[in-house]
Image (tube, rainbow, N blue to C red):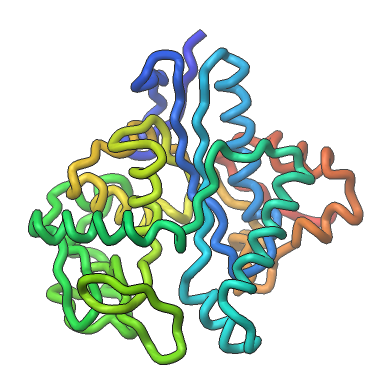
Length: 305
């Protein structure tokens, strides 16, 4: 029996053929640890746990990488608001995510790299992209030149001239407003790492491209994540990796959201239901069944009923 997957990039169901016979390599965009997980967050980990288990059941040797984004704007903002170290907030919520995965029966990943532990790999990737003419340094920032990469936006099927220009808050010296930050120059009071282009911190997209390359090499089978990551995150990952010379992911697999009243479950919208609260009222196996039974590409409209 052939395993078939819907590939977001191809916009069709494709027969799965691994790059290495008998082996499957998967990179899943994991938690941004600025808050404890709600059931929308945990659905992605659970859906890909099911996929991973199915590959194992079919006799494949699976390498499963799920990263942790432990530095970003929201973590820094919470650090300032709570007067707590940024790393303390990240670690506290990373543990909450792992508790959520564990209680719902998700197997631990083969590797679970933290973004902050891979700055040297990010510097190496930025250096290579600058040398190839796909990136440039400006005022302590490093930006990816989106117009230098002809395949940009093929995953999300958009036209670059139709993109709404981002606010670009704190991102100065861009050649094009749509160029995205791979490295952000240090601001007063923020954590920073040293680079040849000045002190600062990594951009979200660069983190995943560098970690996928380190743990899975220049080409791997499946890149996964929530539907909301198709653009800009996965689109920008592809641009960086392929411009650097990687083949990157062969299949792109995205799970749909958990919604409430038609809106994506989100802490910022105030419509989230924490995993830790759910398991006080329902057995974890019930929650796993609730999140895992619908097709992974279908929305789940949550209600107490």
